[in-house]
Length: 161
Figure 1 (cartoon, one colour):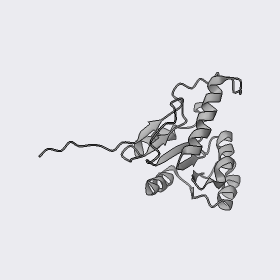
Figure 2: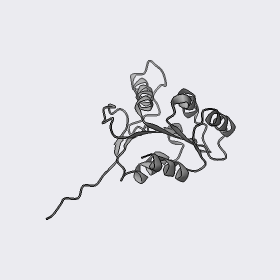
Figure 3: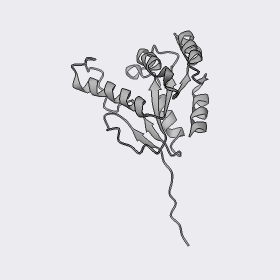
């Protein structure tokens, strides 16, 4: 008897796609350094590594991002992006946060503060990040698991899935 092969595949959701997904499937938000494209596309790496897992990946790296958008509450496209990210983090089961050493990541630092007490953060902050001391102290205070490399972060994510 022949049985069809069904491959489990991660589902990737990016803005502005609505956040309507099956809440019985674990979800992970990929928070971290982007800096208008200056940071490596680490989110894509994690997507590929998790493609065979049953998981919803909420990736804020918008394919249609336009760096000329005015970053203002009065800009509907910018407002939509920020609200999508905040709502996605609130809905996610896990927030994987990466602070790339060659970036400043001000929004990620803000998000660390917003979600530090949520019990859903995993943080990767390698040596060389300009505010590593602050990140280390916040993570210690709130018992947030810390990693030094993206591969360690990926291992912790896989363990939780």
